[in-house]
Image (cartoon, rainbow, N blue to C red; front, side, top):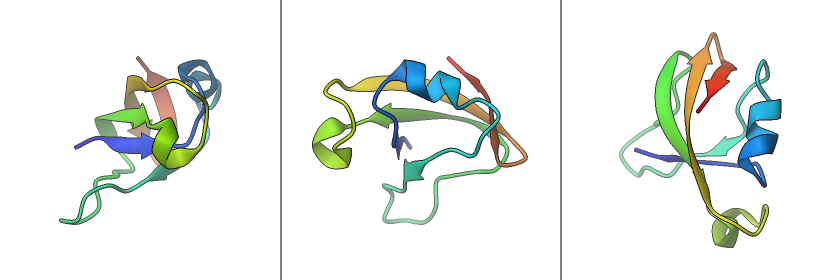
Length: 70
């Protein structure tokens, strides 16, 4: 499971701590997003049109808000 997040850079994603995650579901087997928990995300510019480089991160969510990004 890896959600595609809609941020041009990892720095931009980190600046969104405390806000809801902007993402695109990628699974055909059901929702991957969780309001609480830790999961991987990535930016895929050829899919999202955001930024020019791919990046991967681990996001921790708490009550529907980004708690941390690693």
